[in-house]
Length: 375
Image (cartoon, one colour):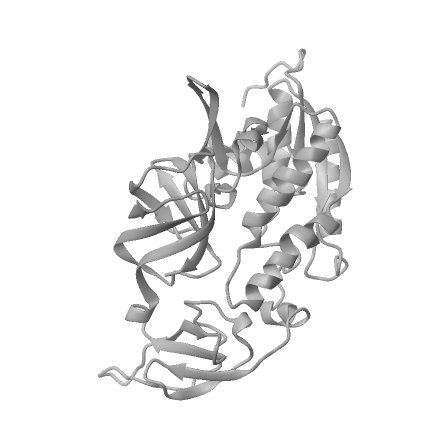
């Protein structure tokens, strides 16, 4: 990669440096492009950051080491209180209500592009940048500039799904340098620079959960309310630990492995999946087979909609994702409003889960989305 002259600064950009390879390469790229770069390490969780599951201390050491190597200043800022109030409290409320939230979506909207952005501006930043795989495109309109959120060129790493709640003001001040690069090239740059974290594994989840058993973690904050596990026909086949601990489509950890149920001609049986939650009767329903009708939905209702452009899209044909790492599914947008919408899909969608995000696309452009209320 050719180094660019940094003799004249393009302005100050504050980069969220997490200690991972993506944000490290982001900081280096922007310095090479002529920006005055300041690294900012966010500490968002501190309840048990000395445990084996939360790597905050090591992440800070990695981020500081990279900053020293590439020649940028870095500081740490503690957003743990904001995270607990704006993200974690909602996370617990959703699980208590039997839904399955994705805290990364709220973390981006409330912490990385709100609390972090505000702090960066107080440091005199012109722009902020993160290591997300997405792109921002500015479009001239008769009423000024409009900013579009686009998928990354490397679709296997695209993170626009998690960024769909960003607004015009946030996108106007954000750079996503990795949106134009394949992940393999990012790793290659890190190796060529001899970054100390060049071979570091990508983060798989949110710090406060890490690799720990999820049920064990949630148990610390939510009471267990055991109840029956029933089949679609009403037969009781086991007992659940509490509806909060299960998500639609879940196959592992149901505790009913010995229940054979319907068997094939060869004596084997289809796997069991979580299919429905009856909150009123504290009952978990399971079905056999990946393609059981209870696991398939042709439509959904979404609420708390957020539209990137600030304008409600026109009804019509689009594509959507109802979970991350899912292929875009052709759909029709119906009854869109500022706060809710409905989607009808050409093909049934698997395990459409209340609390997850339904994100709408027009080609590569992410229009926004909302939280799934019901299939």
